[in-house]
Length: 225
Image (tube, rainbow, N blue to C red):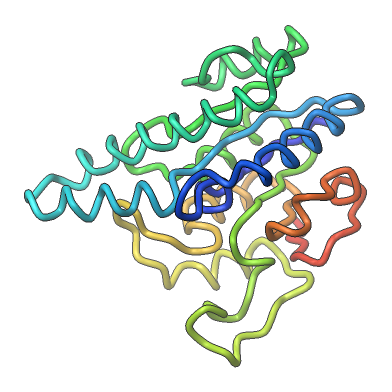
């Protein structure tokens, strides 16, 4: 299979880089790459949001703040490249053609953000579409898709399986601005819908067993085309 991994920045760097988790994740990704072609997109997470909030104090434009976020995502991507060592393409990939070339060199391409207005969720979905991926795996700090934000609403219920159109309807309530955070952003959900990419949304614990996840064994959410 060809698989794209969308790894949330807050999973890698909650307050500071989670070194033990990055080691475990890179081991799992390396193991999966022995049997499958994989590509990775890394988000900016909390760090990016903190920088964006500060930039807002200086009345920076949304596009300018997006560029700040992109730089943070690429710094996070470099951490993962360091952990993957010789298995990774040696620099942060900045466009889909370069990712395609890296895969054909038998390396793992690792990307961050690309353009203002596109979250790394959207980049991941677009990359999966571009590469003709069989599976998109979203690793987030929430262990699946819920009916509401479980961090704010204790009555929110996890959805074990859903259609892509249902995901679009659920996340369309989100706010589309620099640094906005939903389990999957609305643009990414629409790309998943149009391209028919099977998607898993999993949490940090499942990410420690990616070899099982790619076989469908996980406690997250399955999004069917």
